Length: 220
Image (tube, rainbow, N blue to C red):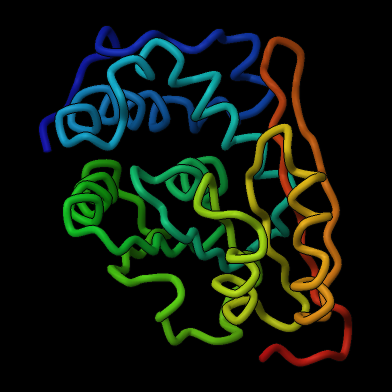
């Protein structure tokens, strides 16, 4: 994968980016933004209209998820697509071990090339469907962004979550409604859910549904 110049994609607002990312990580994030704006668009992973708002709508939005994840956690990003939020988390938090799970070959190819181009030793790329991936109870945190409605996400994600782990599902303004709609499934999985929002001055709000297993219960 060819490198790209900073002029390929609009640069972040330094004052906003500094509130979300450590200064030493911004160069890698800018390279990733450039790859999204070029190869990502060419391969149909990012729409051309998304390029001018890559930072606020995508990179900063995903970066605001990072403080919710414990130090040194193992993370599975299901339906990773172009690497959102998984690649952003791996860059922003090198203490994390991040597995990008994606079923589509062209997306997996892009993720492999991103990992190599950015030299991310804490990233593993796996081609698999979330609901058929036999990694029960392996991860401290499972993430998903715009993947499926909450009832379906619970069935896909919770079997992968370790006993004291959690699901962090990035959602929109209907997050609370999804929790209400998922009440029967939450009872079935013996889990509780809450809406968590995060933002910094100058950024849009990141909305997350956090799902935690009840202590002492088993999945399945």
